[in-house]
Image (cartoon, rainbow, N blue to C red; front, top):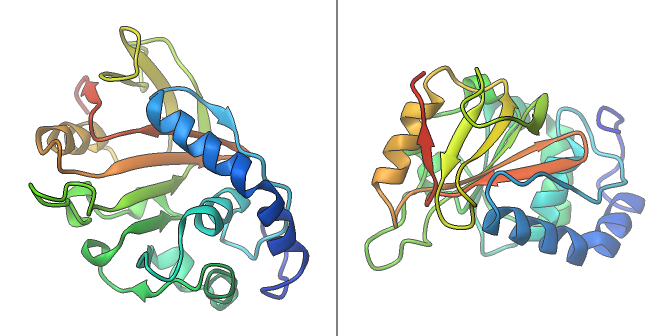
Length: 208
């Protein structure tokens, strides 16, 4: 479980390495099927405030060629920094606009989505993938109060997630993110061994 201080080596890396292919398949699946929540196969120890789910994503997806940005909560933890440097070899960057991947440990204090790399017309994939740790992640009925309701490729009709906490204006941010398509960022949400995604192609409904 998160919160236990461990050296940045040993069993944590071994357990993630065994699960890397399963984790990768899960991440690809939820991105292709927005609104679907899948179990994330993690069973290892991470130093607080780095959650096992954030660490699993980083160890699976991040490497020396993928600049990584951490929010203030994660960047303030020397143990979390050691863990990520050891297991990913990633170059840590200070500006979200410089990152290929961003890990957010405090969703309420995260930068607006437009602050991350948006890609270009020629290279829309040169954008940031934002991974957000939340306390609550569950299916919801489309249109339900406080749920994120959305539609788009990979969705049969409309899908909805009950997810939080998130910034109060997250729907506005996601609408602006969709308007930049094919530019814009893809968002993953992780919580207690589960993951879901809302890609830049999704149209989010409702007002904040």
